[in-house]
Amino acid sequence: MSLQRRIVTSYVIIIVLALLTLLGIGGAFMVAYYAKYDEYATDVRYFQIEKNGHKVKQLVTNSQYSKANQAQIIRDLHAYHYRVRIFNQKTGKVIYTDKFAEDELYFVNSIRTDDFSTTKAKRYQWSNSAFVSRLYNYQGQKIGLGATKLTHYRPKKYNTHISKLDLRNRIIFTLWAGVLIIVIVALTVLFFSKRTLRRIMAPLDKLVAASRRIEEGQEFKPVVYTGGDYEMEVLIKSFNDMQTSIKEYMDKTAAYERARTKMISGISHDLNTPLTSIKGCLKGIIDGVARTPERQKKYIEIAYNKADEMEGLLQQLFYLSKLETGNMPANPIVLDLRTFVSDLVAKNRLAWEEEGAQLSLRLGTETSQVKIDAEQLRRVLVNIIENAIKYNDKNTALVTIDLITSADEVKLCLGDNGPGVPEDKLGEVFNEFYRGDESRNTKKKGSGLGLYIARTIINQAGGTISARNEQGLKITLTLPRIN
Image (cartoon, rainbow, N blue to C red):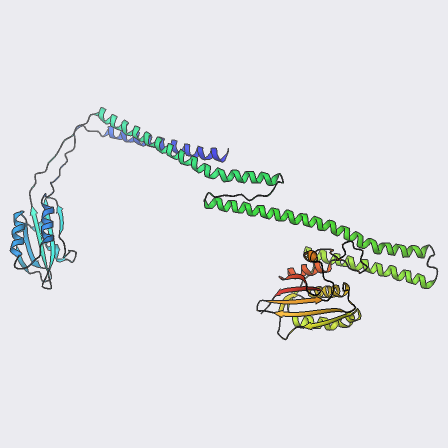
């Protein structure tokens, strides 16, 4: 069952149940009323309300008490047949009083509380007695005035007679009125439910259409929703985020496939070249081309060096595989980058200088602690420095190492005076098997994995690595500083 039909069915069931409930309750009342029905009407008694009460209230409210006009206030109230008592609220001393009934004194004496206003009168009625009261501020004292009128009204009554037929007709009319109300409610509910369904189904239809586009491999388009409903906004935002994640995953997968194809091609080429040399040397020995011991030794050395080159490439690939799959054991420790770089250069300086390199260090004096696997960091720095020496076109490869420390991070900049990298290729130097010579015909040895491995190690340590041309190639490692 579709969502739309399910919602409409729910509304119909609710309306039918409401109608049946109304009919059942109405029928039960009708049966109960018939069972206890008496055609003789019940007497209804009531008392009239004092018709002059409002005028008396206004009179008392508008009056100002003093000894001079006290008599006038009393005469005015007597004119309306009200009995009066005037007294000091604090002391209870009676200044003037008429005769009151005992039940009236309860209300008159209540003026001694603080619930009465000094600016206007109060008026109320109980049974057939009317009361008006007020407090006056007079010479720093509160003067209470209570007036009451007791009239013995004759209770009135009325009788009404209704036949059983009229009773039944009235009940039937009430039920029909209830049915009419239910119909009106039903139409209203259906009207608004239709609008609600449109608000629900419109974005759902967009989501279905977008899902089909994804299923058919068509263009990814974000779903646009302007309905204003929070839940739908959250749902569509989640769907758009999912689309973005799928697209990023597909792009990443496509890039991975391209890299894998390139990697296989690179491995094939890099392994085929030394393998061909090894086979050639062995063939020369077998065929008797290398007849003298000296020549045979030379061929064997060439084959050994090529085998060593193949082994180095395979070790790089094996190391990279373990690094990417998380099988490379890592032991991150807190180390002082300044001391680490200084020790590394001291141990390898002689070997690098024999290869025609000259190293210049500017490490400063400040302690720069980072957290990283020491062996992996050593591999990163050695790869970068040896690349700077290997691909340098100058007689002397000048390698500079600068350490820059800030509050939150440490930057290690390694630069050389080589030819650099074409600007349009700077973004590829950290890719697998990247070489400046894409035809891979360069005589310089190298797998093209060194900088890719460096980026992987630095990223896993929470840092970043970047490259730029600056009188050669400058590579910058950025790592979080441990304070």
